[in-house]
Image 1 (cartoon, one colour):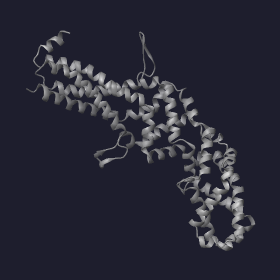
Image 2 (cartoon, one colour):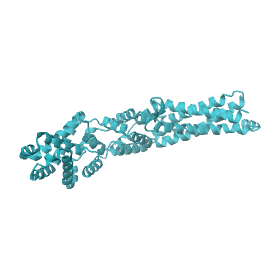
Image 3 (cartoon, one colour):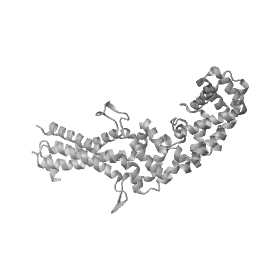
Image 4 (cartoon, one colour):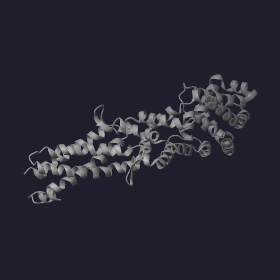
Length: 410
């Protein structure tokens, strides 16, 4: 208290007492700005490559998505998940609307192909084709899924599927990470205020004792901004294992929330990316050169050929071989169009309910050791966290210089 009395005895004593207050505000502001720089903007703003900014996480979406999937692959067995898909249940669900779906797909296929040739096909053959495809499709879907289950390692690249989805819509990755560490982000900002105030008291005393050292405020501001960010981020993850100090238990804020983290992460991941809809789109819209795309086209062509049966030669005669191939191709193009048919969406919703992937991920994450849980989020900060420290220090330096000029230059 003596030092406070000495400070108050000075003509500009109140200015000295404002140093910790400003220091706390600097710590809060730098941490807040640092968090915004992590997530915003999702796309690059400015002139590439150096004149501008993109949020740290969106700028490295592919890398962070790959890190996430490296962890997820450790807890999900793709074979187990595929075995949970009840194809008979899906077929039963979409059966009532199957005729409408076939007619819709076929009508669009007609328009995509050469309609004038399709009109030459006798109406009884068209009706036969509609009816037979309706009967053949459930078995075709079943055989397709059995093939995928048996050969999923060569046909499916779930990791790349998720990486591409996050890269296409970087906002999804931002929402996933924000939701998972929302509490820690709040802690980061608040700790900046508290730590900044504490360091500001030291800064005030040093500046009061050595008034000629003008650089104490700007240099001290840099140190405060840098150190508060550094300590706050460290306390989010350290210590991994709880340390008992008297009546208190010290453990990283993020690690301590393991159960809630598991719930938030699993729900957000499966709602946004790792779900049946993304999987269906991945199958239907795979690259034309991929084995998966070729397999899907094979089953579609096979279904149409089998549906025609002995009438196939009449259709070929009416349409011509080239237009028949175009027709089958346009059937596939309609299935892989932007908007999935409602009956397919109903099957997707049923599949998600049956698999319940969110519960699988959550239950297995709750069994994680502290170091395993740390691996889910720590890499997000690790490589680029120095930027947060430097930004904090730079803003602190400017604020300290401003204090010196405005309050102590006279």
